[in-house]
Length: 225
Image (cartoon, rainbow, N blue to C red; front, side):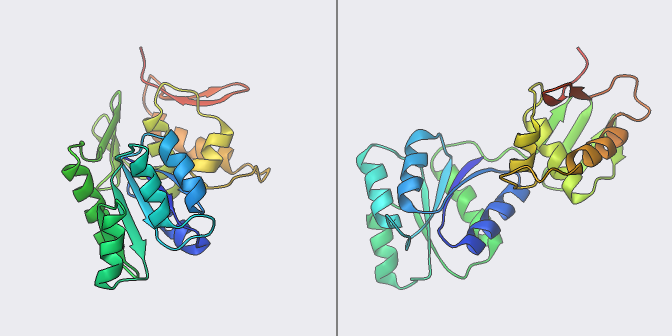
């Protein structure tokens, strides 16, 4: 599922994006309503999670403009304002649901799933497969040829990203931004170390390797043709 998070509080935004990514979603983040509106209108999102009180453009104004432009992406408002009148304002502005802060992350996930079902879209994908390699996003387990692969948390996220982009060349920058959440290159060998460990776990004792290094470009996970 592709989710847009619009939240100006850095700590809250980090908590949301990290939790949603760990739950198997693809997440984009905007720090204010104006940037959020730009992303919402230019992207194909399954759900937008929008804070009410933000600089430059508040959440209510952002969602009103989305609806005025014909954007029907389901919107879940988040706000410390939890009175009935506040919820009514959010729903009348075009929101589909309203969750008061603080909230349990499990409730947030449940509400997102409910919005997607209500909107007639498919539920989030819970299993990935490339050849004989399978990844279960709910149980957080990986197997190849029926044999369990023990993965560390970061290795699981790395494999998940590679499988979601199977057959494509995944660059170092893509991995840094989407797996490590670095928006700069720290000039370390962290990717090389993790890729080496992951390759040993995936391809050991198998005649056909799945994980390939594309010299000068990045990496590619693909099944044997």
